[in-house]
Length: 92
Image (cartoon, rainbow, N blue to C red; front, side):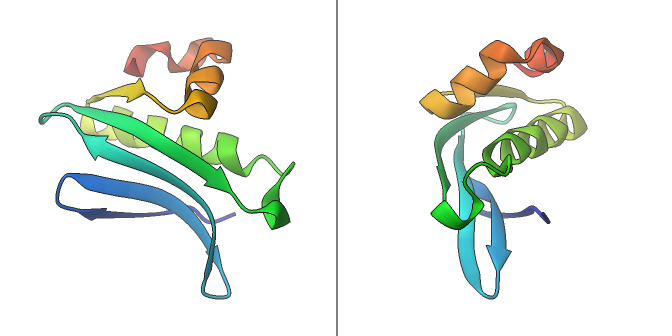
């Protein structure tokens, strides 16, 4: 799964697209210069059970580490992944 990213002003998203169709996305909002808030995660039924949501969270963690920023997981799915994955504590 190739995860892409795009930003438009203070909002952005990580997403998986196949054949021109957005099959999974994680939407975030910048909260200042050093923090993003994960607002929403959605995965199409075609990708359910394949770990797409977890991959989106992993990509957000890599992004946070690269930019030296923190993440506030507002989305219940993202929050549950962060709670279960101790390796991600450094970006919270």
